Length: 68
Image (cartoon, rainbow, N blue to C red; front, side, top):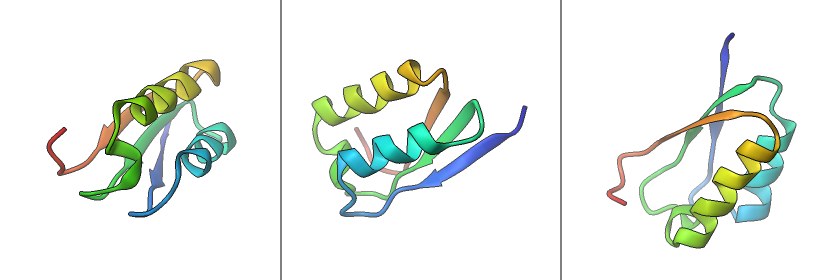
């Protein structure tokens, strides 16, 4: 199974990220998140991203150079 890379913009909001997860064709996703991105600045958004991937039957890896 191939994985799909989803690139997140610095100022992208959580609704957009969840939409990208839902629209992904692959069952394995790598979420590429730049340092300082809004979606990883609070734990609630991180949980929403995780819940969206589970609800849509997708495996999720978050790739970033930011310290969390």
